[in-house]
Image 1: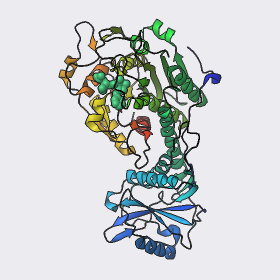
Image 2: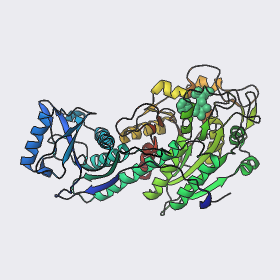
Image 3: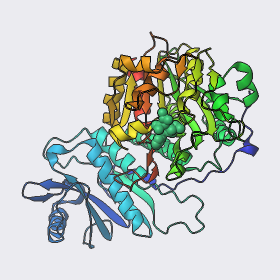
Image 4: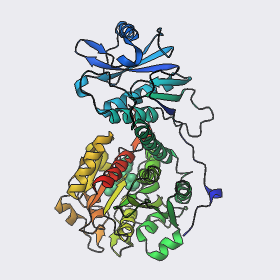
Length: 520
Ligand code: BES
Ligand code: MN
Ligand code: ZN
């Protein structure tokens, strides 16, 4: 075991995020821009901000909005001219859509749109946002807590800017957002929790965005160790010698084709007042996936820097659990390897022996994620956890079936459906996927226990799911989250989601730990 040596921790580029502040008082602080929510009403725009601005100012603001063609349509923003009586010289109106469709996610997206819009103005701006207080609505709105969290998360995450190694970073940044929220006893706590969640998402995004030349198994392990030590989370790193000696044949097999040897990182967060439930989290950490000898096509291969997205989300989640003092014990098992073609790389036809003794016949070296996850799952179950959740950018089939915003969830039906429901509550969409019995037969090998790909061309998500299931004891509730699409946005930014690393499924995993803390 090696412990963190801070001198070897590589500096990975970080994205910038606006400073998020809270205002619950009646007098509003000054800012460069005032962000106001606008509802798409049946007979024109509605401004649910009454008792914050005063009747008169609100009426004239409403007139300004109508004159400027503000409708309140969801997804839109309008920059309005200055007006007397307001704490900021500029106004950004953001559409929330019809009141009947209002949800926390609408608010989160609107806040994200506002932050992105303001960053694009090309100045270092400060904003004062009224999105955190919709108590001016006459109709039923989402709970106050949910609105505050959504506004904070949306503003923070939508304001994220990643410029990597650019010598001249883009000029537009949003330096600070003050979120106005109702003055309640629990508001500060709701606010700081939402800040911690946003911070975790940002942590995962930064890790995913780091290119593979910087983040390879050894350096990634050093970065994780450094983060863990700072958060008081126990960390253990197994080197290639230890992995080989202990029988981690899947991780060693995949890592063999790379000049940068693999690692297995284990994190352990133990809450102060035990005993509690024990959750095992596992995340795929392929720092770059060329496909190995079953080489990928060159177009879009660069996107494969995101093939460690599952591990990044798990790392960020464990740190958040510690930060939030969640009363759940969490053990994370993170297999890190680089999948490269080389004279010593694993070949199609080769056989590997996993940590639990299961053997795999390699038919396609590009189905590498399951090979390292097999070892990690086998190791994780040794701790006898109560639940096992694994997240990975595992199959192109996930992207083809559900697209790049919806996570596929497989596993024990109760836990699977619970995760789908919790994902929805955070604004990260997920959908349950089946594990048809005949697919289990299709990954049986004549010369090993399992084939790493099925013989049937279709339904690749289930072949991967069944393969992983082999390593989970029958009586252990488990779930597999295929985040191949959702972890990395190859399209354009939208709402609070930037291009490249998205931070999914951090919010779902935190929500799950939270839910386990309450309901077991
Ligand atoms: N890392 C990829 C899956 C992936 C695809 C992630 C697209 C993100 C976007 C994984 O290792 C892979 O290559 N899977 C293969 C498996 C196949 C060979 C059975 C795939 O899905 O094509
Ligand atoms: Mn692959
Ligand atoms: Zn992969």
